[in-house]
Image 1 (cartoon, rainbow, N blue to C red):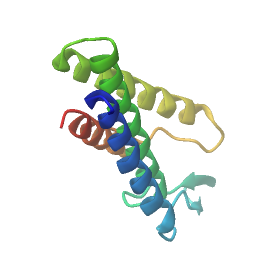
Image 2 (cartoon, helix red, strand yellow):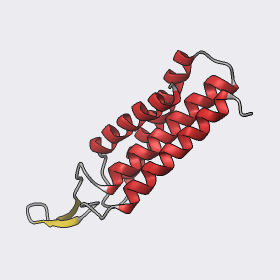
Image 3 (cartoon, rainbow, N blue to C red):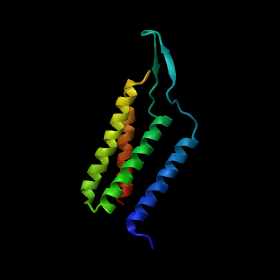
Image 4 (cartoon, rainbow, N blue to C red):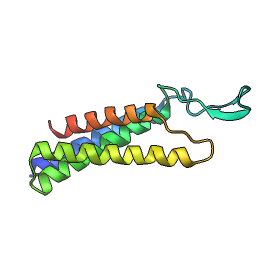
Length: 131
């Protein structure tokens, strides 16, 4: 019979697979539309709240935080509280790093909306991992 920690990891993977399938199965709702701005005469990228990009941030953050929380707690025998802090900090740092990377790309920009999706994903992943 499977141990409880392995069951949690499998449950997290199943939930996140379902979330990914739901987010990819929907039609595009305005992801990164490029438009011309007459006042600056440059290209800008639309950053909408409900877009595929936000769903991908949410799912990736939920996956990373849930799995890292479970692994840190169950396989390295740490307390649940320290595991939650570690996984949240790790995942948020990765999301922040990705936004700084995006800022340096051509037509890229730092998106606070992506960070909000990351934080929601972190909360979801930790919630699933601690139940």
